[in-house]
Length: 80
Length: 465
Image 1 (cartoon, rainbow over the protein chains, first blue to last red):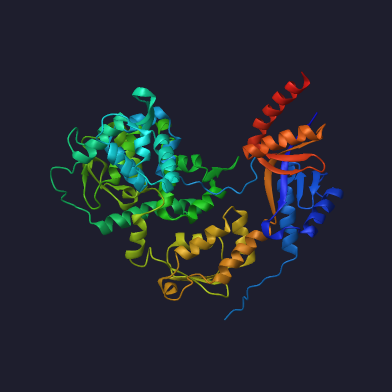
Image 2: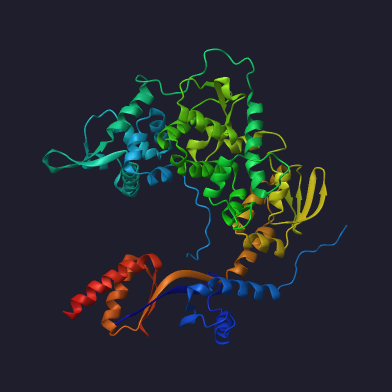
């Protein structure tokens, strides 16, 4: 017997291999049902997760929001 | 559903032809102009091969052809064999004694000969017999072409002070997925693809637009072969020369009117009996890669040459009075001041993210800024400060900390042996994305799943018997 599941493989961006914090964030979102329900199908290894496809969009927005909160404007905008 | 960030796929002439069916291709080669256009776009080595066998009216053994290149170029030979076969320019035949050989497509052979040597039916477009009393110069044609084309772009960015475009153009925009109608709304809105389209250079835009047009040609009662043939004819015409419409069929006349609307040809009056091809049309057969339009951009005055200066403090100065160009910059810039011939904006994280969210990629923004850089910027390279280019890319990467791939997970294998067999099979097919021996899990690509599944079914059936 073999079990087959369709979904989405989440990998880390090449330069950010072993970004453990981001993985913890995903696990946290999963555990707290932050996206409405659990979305991680399988925790594969340190750098791979397998998630349910229907949560992709909301997950992306969530991460985007988070990155937005922890950034500050760079450009100077003085009026001259 | 696909999770990959889609970029607009702008095919060149050959990749487009490869998408056509064999019968369409064969009919297409009935036209000398098409054969010549296809021939001149081939890589050099393939042209050499075709020239060598063009006048040999029989198949040539593969072994002989193989000896025409030195052994270390075997890879290139392989490539051209593949290309020529895919374009149906030649086909494999069995020769006497079981030898395999290549035979040039007879239609293609006949018409390429015709194009090169003359004879046969007249295939190029004819100038009218009498001179045009109101002849148009090249400058006017250029201006007209750009004006018409910008009209389409204007419509897309939604600056409505210009005339509205026709329903045919609307349909094509919708069909191409560049604009769409939200349910319950009358207005068309621009899509992700549309944004990317806006930032492409003009020749790529025209080519992409035409491909989409040809896609729907049959639906609007036009013959695809005729249209393509005519486009290729156009690409052999001379700029500034007028051509007669007398011998054109009704279908082609209709096609001509569409081309006229997009600025590919100029016609003073519909009933004039003559038309002028513009630079937009002359470019077509060469596809997006090399283009005369860029030459035009370089030579003509202020309007088309670069107008953007970007400073290291993220400020953008755009010397332009065109509302289209301002609208384009506003896609990824926060505008601060506006003067009659100058717009000042600033690139911020927020404005770039806004652009990224609407589907534009960082590379497109950077290449747009480079492409339209003010001539002054070229005096001191880099044209675009590298801090800016890097920062825009960093902002994009920040949104993509993860890479998402559609896939199918296989787990809970009964035995290590089963797992190994399936894993190796997927690996050989190149569809294995990830695996671990530890928990006997593997992920294959969505595309590869069907194949792997079939294999597994066969395998498990054999195993149980």
